[in-house]
Length: 136
Image 1 (tube, rainbow, N blue to C red):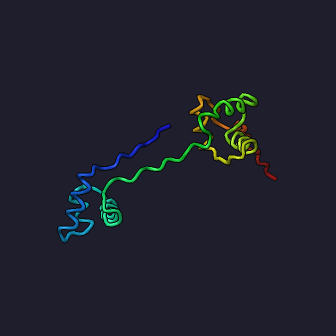
Image 2: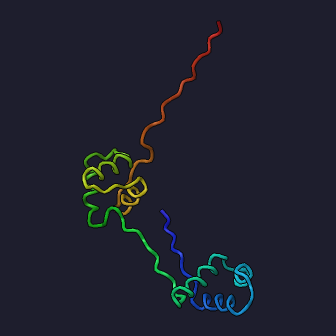
Image 3: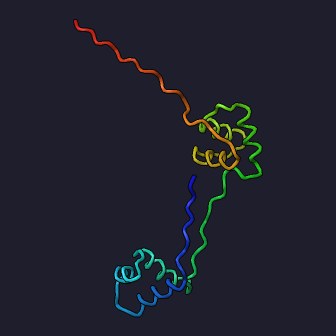
């Protein structure tokens, strides 16, 4: 599992970009091209300065996990009861017991964080035998 953390660009760069936009008669596109950043960043920073008076990056909102670390022991118990459950079945059972609705991705992340593994496929692929064509 790969978690990407995006770092905010420096406040010094933000100030230089906004100052360049305000001092000159250049468009968002030209300023963005000059500093090698996205047009939307220039727009956001100009609007942020106008709105708040500062160019400090806003905090990044990180969603709380559906299953907090304090409840990993409950997840381990759930898996131990019936180890061959699929992600769908585990998520359904968790919702039934604890009234917390979650999808497969959330359940998968929780299992990984709890140190558990899960089988890859919910079912085996059936053997397909082609039908014989009879000529009449």
